[in-house]
Length: 416
Image (cartoon, rainbow, N blue to C red; front, side, top):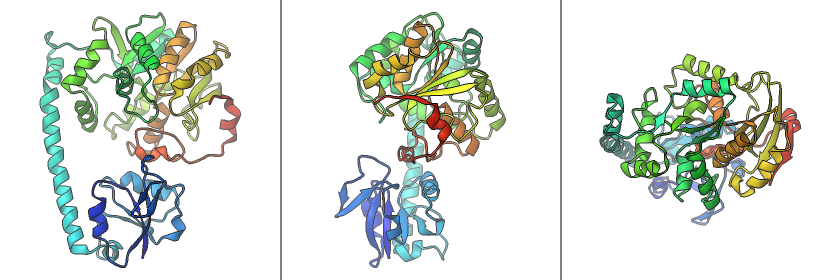
């Protein structure tokens, strides 16, 4: 029996050893760009879009969290009966029993799941113990705990609408660049970019808002899973790093204005729908210019921007866009100030919205809003979007091509 193995995680050796002797691995698949093209035991590792899927009988998924990968496989035309998820639920008729030595495999699955549960409990307790002081003191409004002055999402949106204010947003990605420890695949460390971000963080330009992710206090209203992710990042050490560059006397706006869905409880769909509707007021009946990465495709395939008057696009690199920043800025400045500028370009968007605001443009660092809308429409939280680039879901880096004439007609410049 010939198979492909999807996922080269830390237990790959153990899982391979549990395969029956008549099972042959022809090749591997992985969403990690660094692992693709590498050889493992003489077999090549492909991206899903490049692998010779017709040559195998089954795909074995080895990832512990396998739901997104299963969706990725089915979106790419692989029938569910050809997919075996090692950590999934298995009936007696399942192909799992033909591929693996059942008793030791089931024992290993049970041990892995129990270890995962214990690790999550320990991790949760550690994160709570480190962050609970800040959460409690925010609720109690104690002056002894220092917190940035961040207004609500609602006030942020109202200010954008009522004052036609531009906005630059700061999240953990922007701060990591300031610290010289860039973590994201879409932007490497860049001293010039770090210097600009520091400048913007404490700036006071009329008509321009500086927004922080509201991660420093009690995080009211957010999903527990998102709170835990924030607690994991916002250790006392990282908090002190942030506070070095934040002006505690400055009023900041809320960067979560462009996060209407996925950070909130996913079952509260009516509230999320209202947040999207409120955001759509920004570009209602307006001519808009989108500055985005070459596979971002904001508004393509959905109705997020359908209430706008017209759409033009400037396409920049998905990764390390700041390396061609001057070209991007020059291209935008050729466009009339009557256009609303929506920017989805990672940390470069933070700088571009600021520079455009100083020159009299209305510019919104819009971030992942289009992906938020795609996820909202699916109703599944974070999920695979096959034709749009996203650094937050690993398999979304393997982006499928599209054929959309309206999208192509909207492009006025491509910057490389």
